[in-house]
Image 1: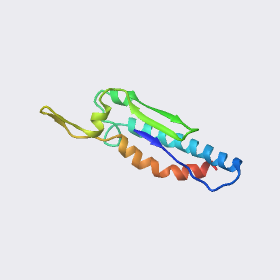
Image 2: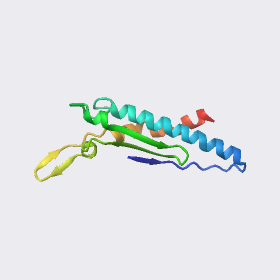
Image 3: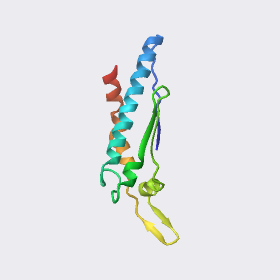
Image 4: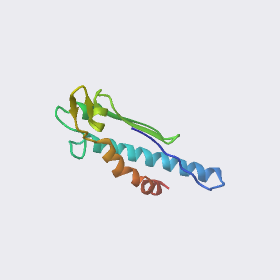
Length: 117
């Protein structure tokens, strides 16, 4: 899951723009950190948890300067857990864990950003 934020301001001064962008970067890091924490918790609020392999494989990357972040699983099957699987007679229902985290914390981006200004 990739998140790319765009912060637009009508400030004319370079210092004010830089401060807003820096606050946006800090807020994005907080959002993606909280998303990763929630996604690592056991299902139903987080990842399906049989062995814990998928939870251990969750990681994130945040580029604060460009306001870009990624939350990803390196388990090899994290995407199948998120969206489900139906192929060749094999089927299991989706058990989303990243989307609920996104729905919970992305709306708080503005609140976090105001806190850093």
